[in-house]
Length: 162
Image 1 (tube, rainbow, N blue to C red):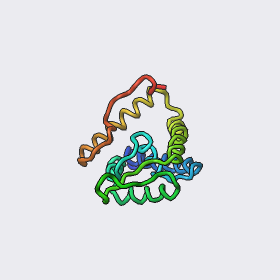
Image 2 (image 1 turned 180 degrees about the vertical axis):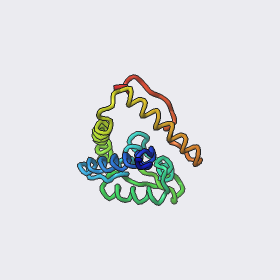
Image 3 (image 1 turned 120 degrees about the vertical axis):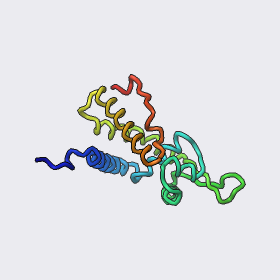
Image 4 (image 1 turned 135 degrees about the vertical axis):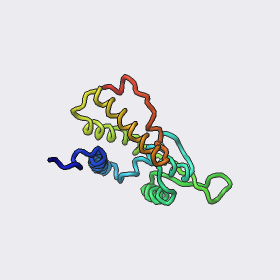
């Protein structure tokens, strides 16, 4: 009789997530970044400057967590903080020129890891996997009353099949 945990989808997702995160971490070293920092750079690159609280919401983390990450990225010269309007308590964060450069370099790095992860799956299997994972995310989000960050959107295109 086999071990029940070997057939657990949840355990396989955890293992896949850990391996994916470790691989991303290895690749991020080339850009002098740590896991998690790339998400901040990606959001700021795609959406522009924003208040720290809004950034925390987009990352689904608490404000102190994003504050620490921004402090580290600021030390590296990748982001800059400035007062947000007339309220001195609010801080707006944006990429510096160097931050924009690193954010641009992230695309190919993340694509490499994606390709490694999906190696051996054809376009149809990749599309099916994305669809199933979106459904799982939606179900867990609904069960816990949490936002799924758009993961439940079903917007596949032909280029997703490649």
